[in-house]
Length: 390
Image (cartoon, rainbow, N blue to C red):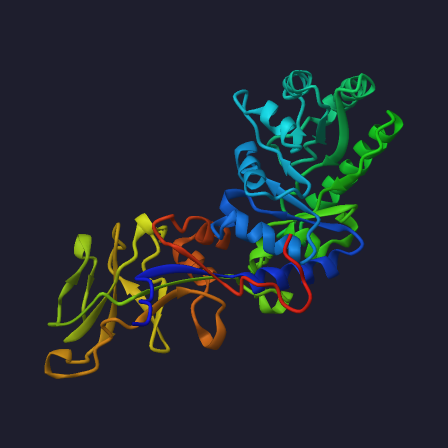
């Protein structure tokens, strides 16, 4: 018997990941590519995406947490790997032991040095400066002191300052002046570090939008997250216009189809009622699967037609109104038909951006929040035309 299709799945096209890496590498050249695979690769699967990205030419991997980086090492991935978001309870010793580069904003430095002493192995650190985003990173006033302290430890053989980096606040809004201000501040702190004797392997500032729109921010390395997954960081520009291919398709099958009378209320709160005799289709995905509860009106594509979700999205399910079909008397039922929430947008199909608009959020959140209850299925796992898997 042929294998049954999954009731619901997030289908990840690894050839799309490889295409995006190759395209972004061409845009960023001669800067190298760091593939950001934090948050389980924005919901796409960190190990699988990391391998595909490295096979397509990415040189580095990036995660937020040390625990995420350790999982990649446990999977046998040996590429240069940076983790940058820590707490006092982060396992710096495990990071040093695994050869994971550690982002350092200042307070972590003594803990990193203690871990290096414990492991009898020098730590690899990237010093981070806050050039205007207001999150982690050393302040501009504290930068000189941090660099001096780090270099003292480097002279003692306890660490190596491998990188210097910062993060941009508004690169997805290219008309805003703050990116120029952050770039100027970054150049100033690089000069301070150089005067102190720092000779980093990589200087990195650009995220996906800056990679695509600001070549003056590329330096030695660009960190690509959203673009790696084929999504656009710019309002009004599609992935296709940027040369990118969305990698995730979220799909299921219609689980119920029935005729209802005019005035039938739909879902909790009965905020939607049918205008006339109609046919309702039940879609077995809800906010426990990562579909935003607020996103009523989000599109679901069935048999080539996009239908908006009507009524309130529930924990496990939501409803589309198909109009009058009279399935009771033998009209066309869609029971068991494939239902696509979002994918690559081909032939007018729904996209993550459509769901982001319905939810009043961004496409980052839409793909990242798809929950583990939705199984990931990978296609095009084998590299194409001469590429090798790491």
